[in-house]
Amino acid sequence: MSVSVETPATEAVIIMRRTFDAPRAQVWRAFTDPKHVAQWYGGHGFSSPVCEMDVRPGGLWRHVMRLPDGKEFALDFIFVEVVPPQRLVWKDAGYDDPPAAGAPQRINTVTFEENGGGTDLKLVTTFRSIEDRDMTVKMGFTHIVSQGIERLAALLQTL
Image (cartoon, rainbow, N blue to C red):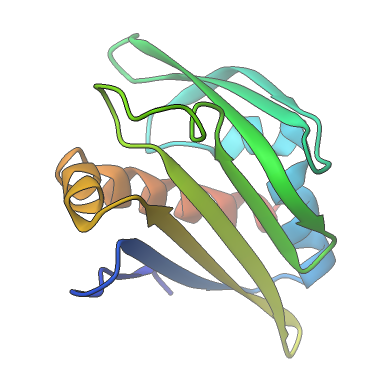
């Protein structure tokens, strides 16, 4: 099973879906426990030397992603909505600031739906504009996130 990716022509969103062969509570835990997130977040060969998560509305998620070539990127997010084990919403920490140069700011909404003994995950990443979305796709976002979701699937098999 693989990740499906949609980029609707008229909406500034990326929609990614994946079904996991794991119960929803287990997928939720792997998505919200920093010790687990550090194991799967990012593409193949990526690591997470820092992953700190205060999973509550207004809580901070601080993440440092190390690429295979050793470069590091600090990511800071703020949780907007937390509804265990159904829904999680977070945004870039600078989302409410005026747009600046660099990677486009986004809001991420992930839902976890029971599907028999498995779980359907749907990740919707919302941008300010279709241009921002398209720039993010060109930067490799969907490829890296898809690989991370596959790494999550592998981790779930070990929990």
